[in-house]
Length: 461
Image 1 (tube, helix red, strand yellow):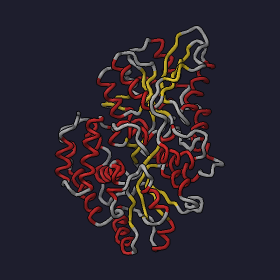
Image 2 (cartoon, helix red, strand yellow; image 1 turned 90 degrees about the vertical axis):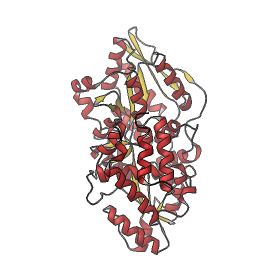
Image 3 (cartoon, helix red, strand yellow; image 1 turned 45 degrees about the vertical axis):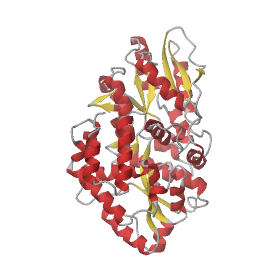
Image 4 (cartoon, helix red, strand yellow; image 1 turned 180 degrees about the vertical axis):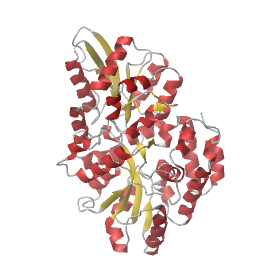
């Protein structure tokens, strides 16, 4: 997806919040719009306090969130339903365009003037708020309201948890990273989808022998390369390997599993596992998607939004059953749980520590009764999203995309750990160093040990 500004935070935000781009379009068109026309319009500021929060005479909480289709409509409708049901505890809300929101919310939080409810992406941004004492610890509230927690995908809480405590309410939809493959190419070569990483290595040899690139990769974009490392680290050493980095443990990148994963990555590159010239291909142009649906590449590791891009731009590739999809397979001898995944485990709502007790209570009531009620779930499914609610799959019936939606639901709901993409989990400073070193690793210009050393230098920064 196209960037709207040069910061790491902006790019990761636009990639994972892709459904906030194209309300009302069918799944394929919505996701294709994401790939071709970029995120919600840049510039501008608040679009004004919305109607629906002006009834009743009781206390009022405040809530800011992103404007633009399709996310604005489900978010707005959820608040209006809550306000109608709670005349003495209202929420005033403000919708703000993507770029302006990121500036406005940071400024407000820094000045101690944040809205009661803070919409965000969890991970590194949330950690900075926690360290500054600007958001409420919700751990005990979730303990007392176990039903609220239990209805959500368990993997969604990772990016809401800092040092073992929960500081945000997971909400909205999920987008895991998926291993896509071209069924027609597999049939032509006479091979089956990989059940292990060893199978992947065997397939690399077979596809290269047939003159077909084993994997498409838009390597110039850097974050596409990162997805490979996220899975290799997880499948070899388990989720705790990157968790140690996220927790700021000294020399965490030197874990033997890390070095093994980095070494395997370079071995795959040297074995011509990727399309020739991958480091000059951009994901923003969707050229990597085209390589898969035109049969020039057999497989591709990419975000779940790729499904809609291929559906919209690949002719009858998807509708004819040409696209296969699966979770990343296990690695022989690895400690990782093959049911775990990575990507965007949800979006997140926090409560400002500066809010009044009355405002905090309204926010908590909204979390318990207003966030992801069945009406909101239906609205997200209508945009092609998979709500992070156990049982939301019952809403997929009748959709032409039901097979894919059910697959995403299954991967996301069964994952014991749904790890947030590294560049979103880390601070912007550390994330930029990460992406730079990933590019060098894939260009074979640094060794695995050099990568680890460079990354250890920015742990906690």
